[in-house]
Image (cartoon, rainbow, N blue to C red; front, side, top):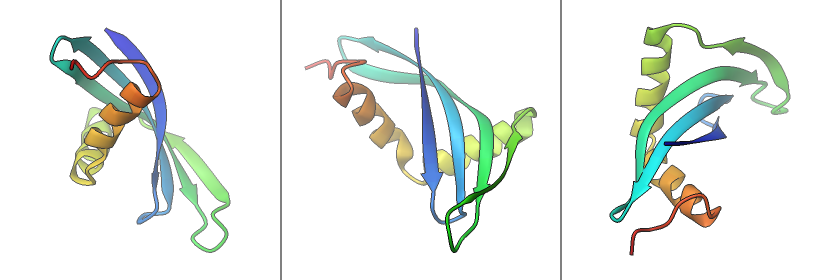
Length: 92
């Protein structure tokens, strides 16, 4: 299993969420094993300047952020990013 760290810029809620992604690859392609949010940085809506950051330490907090990440349709984009960066292959 490999790991990848990325940042989800959630413009709707004016925040950046740092994520640790564990993934694997096989003949079928890339499989996201798990996603762990580690930090949220809140942004000023007008200037997009960073206001404050908090670590994500609770299981419930992580579940909520992962659910929001998935519902925003970001998992498919993440898989494409892994392939585009050369960290994984398409399996084709």
